[in-house]
Image (cartoon, helix red, strand yellow):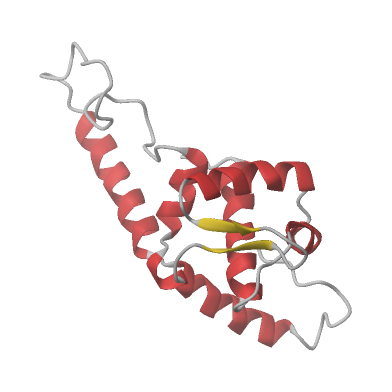
Length: 156
């Protein structure tokens, strides 16, 4: 499975929001500047994340975006699914409920491979919470702080 820029940039944007928000809303322009993401693209990503209940928008002069719930309640899987959709490595009706039935399902042996890969992916991304990434990001940025004080801190 290969994630698109939606998943990669969207995860960076949510992590940036979590690291930099505190109790205040963060402007998209600040996230775009720090992460090197165009405003147009970032607006599209944030719209998907807002629709999925991961972020909330705040209007007004001090407006921007905040997390809709604590970072320890948001998994990487939640974020990636909001942006990418299903994370299955292949289109297989045995993995994706609602797909049209497969005529070879009764004799298909490879579905066991796809199921194990899919389960591993989902277990991994669901087991990593945004708060874990925030902690790791703060640690990495603190260690790198002396070398890049004059540049915005990009999270990747």
